[in-house]
Length: 343
Image (cartoon, rainbow, N blue to C red):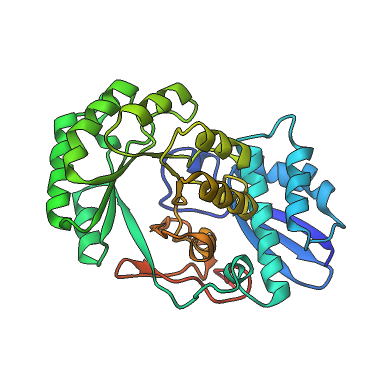
């Protein structure tokens, strides 16, 4: 199963956020092999990522055995190490790695989840949570059967309105009841002191975690939060490769790590993150886990599964699992079970 072609493209994403996810863009990777199989992956980095794929990574991988997924992942990371240990290059590698895992599943005529864990129950309904940005979305989520919601509180400012956030959390906790899960996401807008002020205010409301309050590289700040915050600290959506997550876990900088499989290095990296997390007692909750890629790892590897609601604006692939009453099931097609939407 030799790699004969690698190409990448940036699909249209109407409705995507007005930030780097649109300015740079998400992209799709397609790998074809000598026996006629095609693997599909999703990465990031836009035109810059596509250039990396269609130059250095294509030159490295054409003619190689597509079944050697882990060794190819290592080769890509080593080949780009001088300029790509994080960021756009790793986002590009993520898309390639996922296409290779898709090929692995298709070659075996089985799901990626079953490759990761032959005993996985594909019929199981996995719990999900809905990320909401305003009161209307919160009401919609609760009416749709979600028993877990994450409140995106960027709108409360870089110097956050602590009282406003506390009132919001209190209202949603009252509607969820004591058994529902409630989280908040600060989108790296705060500092240590403002984060602690918010954490102390919302602690009485059984908040599962406070997500990404600081910029990703503020390691000393996260260390202090882990020591002083009465609410567990989550992050890692913008971390890269196993070494990056090893640092977060070894130094106890997050109680919950949230790798994005389309950015962090792909399935090969996510599997290693789960292995390290089990060893060190850290919870893994992948970013946008209910989409068609990370959900396979959540079903197969996670002892405390929880999948975040998907992007509504990424519509170029079909087969992403549908959410029903706050739950999701793994796609059952070979590989990741995905196809191009216009196919």
